[in-house]
Image 1 (tube, rainbow over the protein chains, first blue to last red):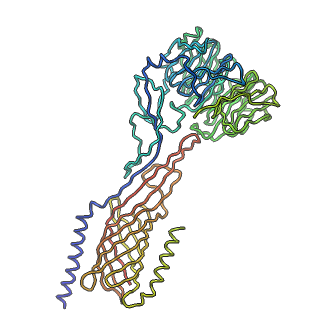
Image 2 (cartoon, one colour; image 1 turned 60 degrees about the vertical axis):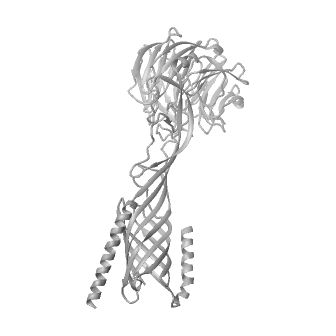
Length: 430
Length: 186
């Protein structure tokens, strides 16, 4: 019996040893952790054109539908409306009740414009292009200043063909699956641009410019007498435009801040909005702007306008700028070297603004257009709110408010403040 | 909640079939196991309870457990066994079911996230074992097998920027492991 018991014990031990060895041999290969990650994203394939081809096409071409409106300028009876990264719509506004989209100037990479007399200035990615618009329907290029806007670059690791110009992007939505065992899923740079915001081919957020050879509150170009001032990232550039069709680069000033958003001329000063505040520059010497004051903000995107006594600044939250505030700040300008905050008004999602006399127009994003009586800045009175449109920028001039909204370009007659009404709309095509 | 509802129905079915378990040929058995599960990433513990009926050389039941490998999960499965050998001491088994996620957070597959959601997947386990008499009518079990479990997670990243796009990642995990169990059958 003892012998039988011992044999059984050895049998059991041998049995499990054999089983363990068999398992180890056959199933080691099956000891595997797998992980696959799937995600969807949008990518853009660049469409290239030669520089010669691009330059040959910078002229008044057939009118195009408005799809992605950006900055805006009014000059005479014409509206010049930027199509972000594509060019400029030329709209005949002789009759504001019936504006006519007349022509389109192809300028790849364009997001900024300024007009002086019959000369239009526009950026073409990193270059400045000067165009004669004495006959807007027959625009003619007069000059290129190359490399004056060096910060127009693409993010997300995209690197394109620098010998050519990107004139368009072909959008694709795709889903990829990758092995992620032990690693986070990474996008692969294959010469395409992976985008977060479909409207910003160059990383700029939507912006719009305002009038009369005046830049609006969202401008990065500003014209003062015979100088054009441009801002980019952390620099203020000066161009001598005494000869309008021959802008000559004059000076570059480092603003010792970063993420410069806007520039607005006021008398002999420039108001420059950034993510760290508003800077005031004295341009008594037009080629050598000197900082004259500063108003510190929390981080925000800061469109600025000014009248004789006050500066009006909108702060917007929920953007890449990072500020939590949505408000209008009004500053006293009696001491320009140290402007004082007088009052803040809460808003919803403010963008551009404009002022004509005592009327203050504010684009409050999804809250539409708000028109205030600003005769007493300590007690702004809301006269009218035009809802059901998402507004970005406004130019109020000569009783016509030109509003750039998400779905088109609106014109409102405010000659009678008790009866502000819509004159016309040019829709956009998505 | 679906899993609890399914589980309750299975328990009810087991109770209903336990009546004929009083018959000599069909008997109700409960198998309760602890074990270790080892794979490519780690070695961790698991616990199972299987309740079913024994008929001749066959056993079938419903099992539920806690599996701590990588992510904590709760497998719910059908268990089938066949005894062999002298006095039916050897057995082979096969488990097939669904792996429910328990409380987990995303791991190293992504740096940061705003939302996450886990979903279960397939659960399998098969192997071979040996049982020997224990106290009174109970038996002591040892088994060695291979187990596989699946899990999915959806992770959302919402940048603190209203104008920025959110991202959604879907991850699918599969874990093949060796599983060593011991326990009591009564």
